[in-house]
Each structure stands twice: as structure tokens, then as C-alpha cells.
Length: 491
Image 1 (cartoon, one colour):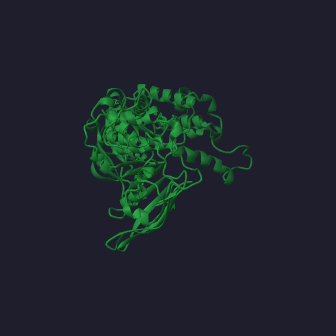
Image 2 (cartoon, one colour):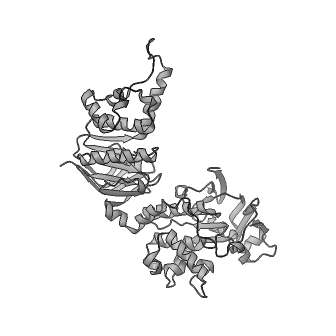
Image 3 (tube, one colour):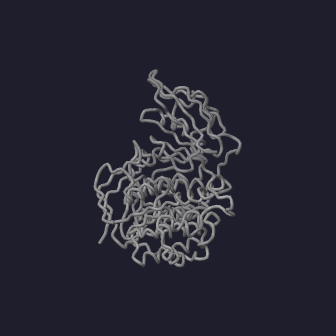
């Protein structure tokens, strides 16, 4: 029986990036789906399985005789090439139309008219065989390319994002065709963006995050894993409203035309040693910033100015939420606009508390619960628990019984229960494994995307940024001090 096995595999993606596949075995006639977000390494996995990547470490043993990887970027190129024929000198003077027929495309590599007709009938495109390929719909071109691949009779077929760009009906038709191929003994590997894309016939699932294969095994077992289930749950949150503030009528709102933060020529120094050196920075409405830089660059110092915790905030030209520092506001006037999560807060949350009470404490800006909790607060907390996939019996388990990543999610919810104008996440991915990192990033995007909260996301690495980030402030070493670079990533 043929198989493909990878043990402790590390594959080169670039000079600085690798793909890690610790332990994977694909056997003949099996059906697999590998799922991961954009940038998780899915397409790299498809290339590694096909033997197209340089292996830096580990072993890849393959006894399949004919492995074919089909990316639908290839399909786009094929369609573009067919249309390009209009601009070439390849056409004869009496040719009425341009481009090859569907039958010619299917038989591009293997000429066998009878098998071509059999596959076309199986895929329901017999009537299209004489039609020019370039005039077909997206779903029809996809079926055509699958027929072309199957003409080669691969014993391992790897399909990279087969459902992208298809409508609901076309997706269902393609899933049914793939199920038929699987029943006929075709070994199939599907590389997918979403858990919802996994067809029912698939037996085995792998999950990728940060270019690592982090979970692999029988479908039911993998999808039952708490973190994987939460990640899958997060896909279905788009368009859902966040739980309301405790009292919407009392919510602290800011003018839509005023910046949240204005810092002019900011300077912080200790014993004449500059920590911040002439930083001018402004956070306008609707902007989500990532702040990057090495340890000791001054990122935490900048945050402490914003949260009102740094004494030198008064000596700087600093305006927070429309009020100049030192104009009579209290630290609580500042903090009521801010939700804050950091590794130090995570470590400080040592009190014995349930997951529910950790989130409830966000209403009081406290670590632990020391006062009466209202029915309204309990109801909203329950809604947050359900949103995070932490409802049911999990809600009343000890906070420290959760995985590190689930604890971070609970702390993020704690920061958001009051719907702050500004959410500050200071190294929220620190110490997390790849799946937890992807889960936290995904929930940040969902939560920020559904509310009116703006984000400051602090990290050492630019690649840590969630998708919602629109701007980046970089601390760059410049001799004994740091200079600052501000970039617009999207508008």
C-alpha cells in the first residue's frame, strides 16, 4: 500500500522562514483536509507534500508513483493565457474564434478521447466539450481542470483551495464530485481556508498555524479539541453584534472627529538617559496601530503615558481622548476609555477565580470580585462567554485550568466588557503556541471588527499583527537612542 510519511520535517520557505511538519502519514485511498488562515502555511504544505520544497531537516518518504498538486492559481493563469491568444500571431487567417475547446484543455497532457468523455460525463460537463474553454464559468473551468488532472491518473491528488471563488451550488457540486472520487479509491488531500469548507467525506484533518502543523488526526478527534473548536467557532462570528455595554446610555463616547491620542515631541528620560526621544504621534478615529520594536526600546514607556500611569505624562505635550494631560482630569477619567491586556496582567491574575469572575471583573477594573454583581452584568458576561466558546461548564471552572491561550481570550473579553474606546494589547501572543496565537489573533479581529473600539497592538514582530491593523509605529535603533517610523498599511 502506497503512503507519504514526513517525520520531523522542516522545509525552507525563504531565508528566514520555514514550514514545520512534525509527524504526518497519508495512506493510500485516505481523504485529508488541512485547514488554516491566510499566512498559516497551507500552500507551502501542499508544495511540501508534492516534493516541491527544499527539506532542511527530517525525513520525507513517499511511495506514491504519481503525485499531482493542483493550485487554482494555475487555473487563473490558464484562463488568462487563453484570452491572451487574441493578441498573438498564432491564429490562422480563417479562424473564426480563438482559444482551445474544453476537450482540448482536458487532453492537453494525455490524449485519450474516450477517457475524456467518461470524465466529462462524470463531472457533468459533456455538453461543454466543444465549447471554447475561456467562455466557461468559474465552476465549469474548475471541473475542466480537475478532469485534465485525472486524465493523468494520479495516485495522490493535492487540491489547493478547490472551493475558492465558487458559489454555494458550485461548491456543493464540487464537494459531491470529490466524494465520488474518494469512494472510488482516489487518495485526496484538500487544502482549505475554513473549517466550514471541509466536506463530509473527509476522514482526517490537520490544522496549520504560523507555518506549523499543530494538530493532526481523525476528523472527529481533531475537531473535538477545545482550541480547534473555538477557532472553528470564530469563523461564524462575522456579522454578529458584540454584547452591549452595561448601560448604553452611560457609555463614555468620544467626538468622532477628534484623535484619541496626540503626542508632540514626546520625551521621557531617567538620569539623562532618553527612553523616548522626540516622538510625535497621533491616533485618529478608525485607526488600529501595531507598535513594534526590541526590548528596551520604550514601547512600555509609551503605553504607560497613554494609560496615565507615568509621572512624566504631565511634562509632555500629550492629549488623550480630547483632554490635555494636566488639565484637571483624574487617572480614572483616562482609564474609563481604556481596556488593557498584557503579559504582566496575566501573571498578576493569581487570585483563585472562575473564568466567569475574571470576565466580570472587567466591569470594576479589578483583579477579582470584591463587590456585588448585578443581574445585568451577569447576563452580559454570559454572552461574552458564549461568544468566546467558553460557555457551559467551562465558565465556572478555575481560570488557571484553561490553556494559556484560552486565559488570554478571557482577559481580552475582560478588557472589552465596558466597550472601551481604546484596547491596548501588550505582547498578547507572548508564550503562546502556534494554534493559540492564531486563535487570539482571530478573536481580536472578530471583536474589533464588530465594535467601535480602536486597537493598539504591541509586539516585537511585525508578522504578529492581526488583520485589522491599519498603521504601524516602529522603534528603530539609532546609536544609543531610537528613531521612529510610521507606516500606513491600509486605509
